Amino acid sequence: MEKRRVRVWITGRVQGVYFRAYTRDAGRSIGVAGWVRNLPDGRVEAVFEGDQDKVEEMVEWCYTGSPHSRVENVDIRDEPYSGEFDKFKIAY
Image (cartoon, rainbow, N blue to C red):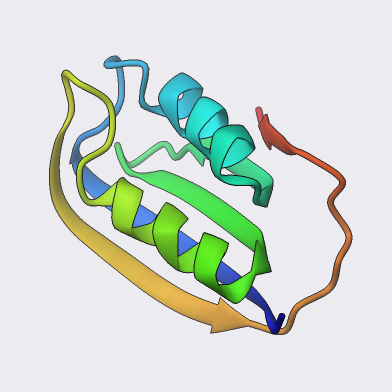
């Protein structure tokens, strides 16, 4: 299976709605590694690494997000796969 790494920035109502916790849980359930964090400008940033199909599933999940979020946009950038993560976590 081909490996992939992406960095995403999610805009909308994504802070204060448990978006990071739901993203962590989804990442672990789907089987990707990486991290998610809030940004000072109100966006959420995340890095997903793993099997290409699982990374794509995680990116698709971002368009829905947590139950109380309202996602307006997901900006996706491919990055070189590194394999540096062993799990998915919330970064602070």
